[in-house]
Length: 461
Image 1: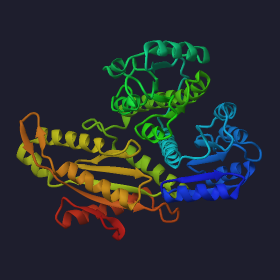
Image 2: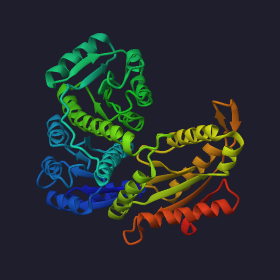
Image 3: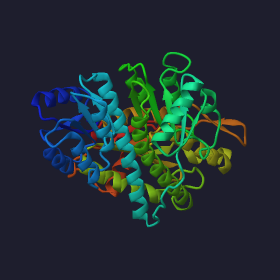
Image 4: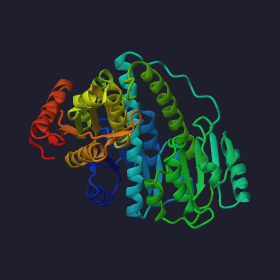
């Protein structure tokens, strides 16, 4: 399953329709008929997303506020849906902490795009929480200071005069450093400390829909990869929502530019972004001193084993599967003996770069020792693990490594052992047991001819 969603709606037919749509998309659903039941189920089942009807007994916005005020449910994204939509109801839901608001009748493609987007948000929150917990378990976490500087917000509008008007209106609604920029300046090379914290982009700039194309460009640049992106779709075209969200926008505001709504959304998104930035920066700095392999820049064995313990515990709690891979370069001693240790180090650095470029942000990648690497992939089933392992095998084996010092190509292949954990609390072994299973599968890949992927416990690659 892709994740667990709590559906809270007073009408059984509405719950059933939503359940059918979400189940078809491979989501697991939990149902509630009232606000009180929704809060109880959220606390007991800890879903990855909550969908609340705005007119739940007890009030959808009020239920949302209760969820966001509770430490055990605060991080769960909330989507409010409304059969009698209005600007007042939308702003009430957003002020209560809703991550998004959707009017009925529901556009199925738009609904699923919002669900995917909020699921990614939850995955990122969980990843940061795991990092923070790993810091604490390793004994080098520190309290983080509060973030004080004003957020930087850049506006991209169809015309300069429109941009200036938006800047004035948004400036009255929130405290931030707001500027208007052109498409070219938004994409200009800049350091992360100079880049805007958020972009407010019109869906249509100089041409129909070209503002949406800017989203993927911003996400591809390191300085703006983690920026908040709000799309303003004045044409109110539901078909644009999936494209905008799936290419990396955080949210889409439909209809005319509404500074009050945009300010509410930006404040919530920026608070999360700035907290994540602070955690990422402090975490990376301390890890660079204690938990990173100095040659490849990857996490080291000590960190990997501590992190893996948390991944296994999270899987046992949520029921979500995860995969663990051990990768070992084939006949690496021959590379060192033939070309020298300097070339061997260059090969390891390049292999680390290829692996890093081909795993998700939520995956753990570490150098486990020598020429061996470990990858932990949360929320990964058999099909996804098989696809990922085969892709990594090809990424390494299909293209020789070019040695910068020798100016020659070095052919390298990799053997991979994979263990899949289905998320059954009783069946998830300890860290040492997981490593032993993956190592046995890796040994099978070696003995069967190398440059292979082998799954533990009889799973087929």
